[in-house]
Length: 166
Image (cartoon, rainbow, N blue to C red; front, side, top):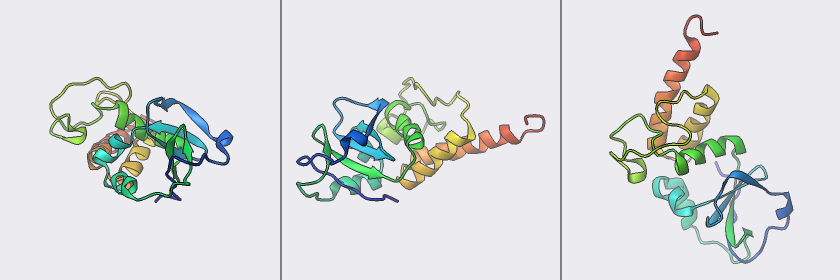
């Protein structure tokens, strides 16, 4: 699942110049840096851990003081493709209306009507985006996102396979 994990605040990564900060998902006040194939995403540890048992467990592991850091934030190396990770992080940080199920308690926002910049329930998503969301929400155990992504996958496949839609 996770290739290797290094977290800490003392040492700087030896090849930080090779890291490319993601232009979209780089929060200046973030407190953890996720790195996928050299692409760095500076995000919030608490929001990742809140709904994901995988991230919660990962961040609970004790780390050596000599671990890599960027801007004083621990680095977590992931094996995911950066484009897919970006879609996944969009749902976590911007997709509060992602879900199709109004009873879903993911993010603790049941019944609150917040706008989504990316993946609102009224937006049609490509099969590749939905597949990425299914894959990563399953991998990181975000059950609410997984459930909604599976519903969207069925819908996207139905549109794709509809006669005359090719």
